[in-house]
Length: 138
Ligand SMILES: [Zn+2]
Image 1 (cartoon, helix red, strand yellow):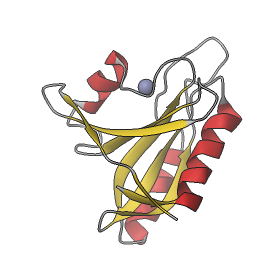
Image 2: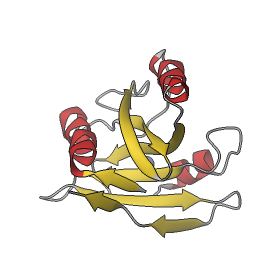
Image 3: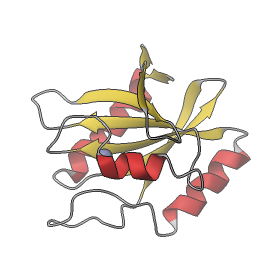
């Protein structure tokens, strides 16, 4: 994906604001470019729960807004607050489920280190993880 510095800053700010809980959201993409950030409610959010699950009313609302903008929900993002920004087994199980957002890029913001780290992945149906580039446009 190609993402502007401003949009990436918005995603990172969301991750830092929700830490130590994980945040999640969708990025609207048109022709490979991120055109909007949609923060989603993390229904697993809570001090003792790690991981994320889409839910609440924010998810269908975001999907409708993305559709209205003639864009696609091309990227699902979430944060890892205490592990490296690489898909966990839970993420892989979710990502390979073709009933849920097939083919999206998985952008993971790692907030464990001193500097937040953004990495993106594709998760195939067989569970294979492939890193894809995050091109930041200034
Ligand atoms: Zn994860």
